[in-house]
Length: 279
Image (cartoon, rainbow, N blue to C red; front, side, top):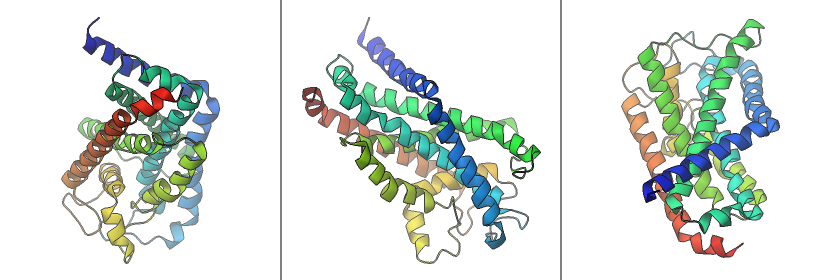
């Protein structure tokens, strides 16, 4: 077996391990889907009366329609959090040390964990999208899924993959140096959740005052804007105030994913000795 085959097998095994662990823990599946659904229904219903439609959106846009791409981003973020927090658990259980002293490269370890988390994110998004029509039938939510041609569906899937890869890589680089899950939860509260809140998922950048500049500097903003462009009907094709153009969204999200993945690989290589001796 050559080196490439060994590394490829390691990436595949680590990725499948993430999926296996997830589906064996039903509470994770319920929590990962239940909280975004509750957020979408409660906030979408409670805030619809105070929602001012942005100038770039059609007047018929409701808050639940506007909030829907933001909930997709929330699912991707939650999946990144729960998938990468397992790094800390693996270190405590000794599994990570065993992988680090094996012939597997550190890059393969990062790719396996990140790709596994990204696949989980896409599966959970697919499950959420499948549940939405059921919520509409029982009157708990409006119909928010517009008709899409096959090319748009393929583009949406590809964009969700890149966005999920970026967030999972971000979760990896935050979790890798940590020794406690409590510390990771603290980072989630003061870094990851504010990133989502200030991404245009919860409220538009238009009319946000000085927060607008913070939101435009947030790389997650362009992932959410890309989802909005692909999932909301009647949006302008070019750039608009408060709504980046699709080419900018794609470019910014790819750059975000590349930087986070590169830093994750660098951290894994730099801290390999410390982790291998921690067993």
